[in-house]
View 1: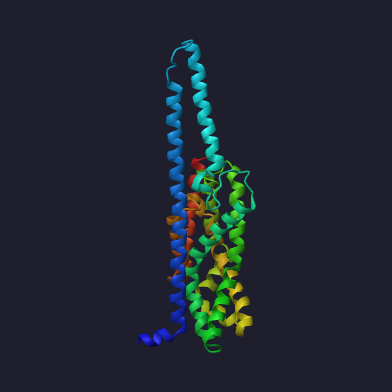
View 2: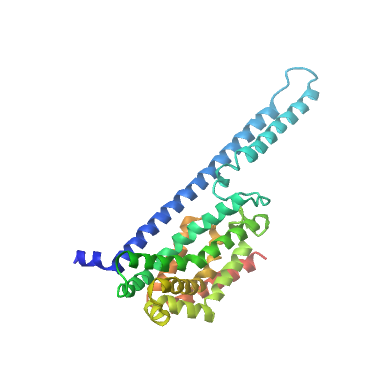
Length: 313
């Protein structure tokens, strides 16, 4: 029984997808953990400078002109503190927060920052979407094994998967650039990754309304019935793997894109919130009656969004 499953390309595809997914989540956790430690280090350093600045400003002058000497001492302490903070921003690289594209400087549009921010978004999108992709990968493998085997079959499934992520890769780079642009916005904080309550309400309202659109219905139908989709759009061989995967990626994108705005409600770099949204994507594709409870979810998002907007106007 076990040997039969090991020889089944559908089973192997799911196992490989789960292993890759686990690796992606571990990598995301590691990177975001480094960001959190960097933020803590920065906070500790700033507190230390505040304390040293206070000590310098409250020192009693040894003797010169009494009160006249005290003012220069205070100014000197403040200058030392300012110089230290400036040095931290210049040399400490905004500490670890700048380590992986999380530069808080709205004027930082260097190629390195763009690449690192885009890489962070690519990592997050891959981690979130691969579990939802696994079921259709399995069905595709089950059909493809009738035409190809061995290395050729593995290459075909890989091409199908890569083409599926192509649109999400484009989205990741776009999201990274948008996030960087939001660093100077009053509607977002934490380097453009967290929406203010008013903007969070708008994003929730948009995501809720999208649940009732014909585009959402059509895309969800294709995502929930991968066999029907593949039979309808099937193209044989290696040459057909890429367009079939890319087209399915388009339907998946149409199904999930509005929910990506919700990442900014609790933080676009919040791994727990990422996991909640990723779990919802998977549930919407495999659990029964998703067409019904996805509308319920939409109604709840509309109500929550309207409440946040009204209470923060």
